[in-house]
Length: 394
Image (cartoon, rainbow, N blue to C red; front, side, top):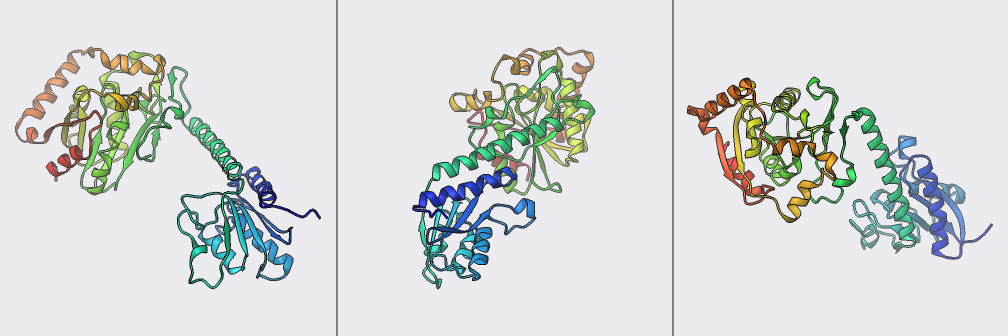
């Protein structure tokens, strides 16, 4: 039996176990227990296959070593693990009287050996284990990063299979959004509504479904749902619901290659479908001037759902804001909607009559009080703007 002569050698043995976990479809974490230079226990992550939340690599290695020694106390042993142990595994190592724990990559979310907390530094515990951090950290981290990158690709492929892309449309790669700052709200997708014609719509739906108020936030001719990222937390903190769609042709929604797709009627039907499918009640529409012709007539089509509107006066985007708003449109092929919305929308007599009826509706009597005009100081309206809207419609 070859004896291990260094911590690096022990970590390479743990990495072998981590690679076996990855090959089995588990998060690649591996561990070995070493006594007097010999491996007496091996373990790899297996909670998915075993349907066992305790089936971490460290637990498996400790059990294997205890069977080898016929003793749960592993005095004089070193536990090598590719990822910083969690609280459960740290507790098990302490209970087993492990002499040393050597780990590779730090775990900033659940690490209990110094990242989130340090159980091994707790002086009140009756056993004290030496910790060695960062051995072959780069290799351990690279294995994890590669696994999660592959998983993201698989998830994206599954999403494409669930919402196949039409031949006459484009879909912005997720890489275009990777560097954007801000909260990553859970995406929702739909492609089976008749109004979508097989195109995939992306939208956010946050907050309780039975909230007293729902904010329907509509971007304008050069924006997408990201522009509302600073307003969402304010609405949610008030206990309200928020719907933020990317119109077809914008953001994470599919983008027809031909500008001719983009008519007010097409987009309005999709928004009405969204309101119905989400069963949105007491909605306040938030929009900028470039979306007025689309937004305001919704109250005529669904008066039972619309409680008011907020017209935002936004300055032009510049610098980082402009770059963020341009992220979904990496080339000319993705910009058909921008070209269509930049042109005056052709209107037939029916659309002209609808727009006039909408103006009359929002200017008349009690309806006028339900239309709030707010001036924002940035192209991405901030928390202060959202708070004014919340207070107005309280």
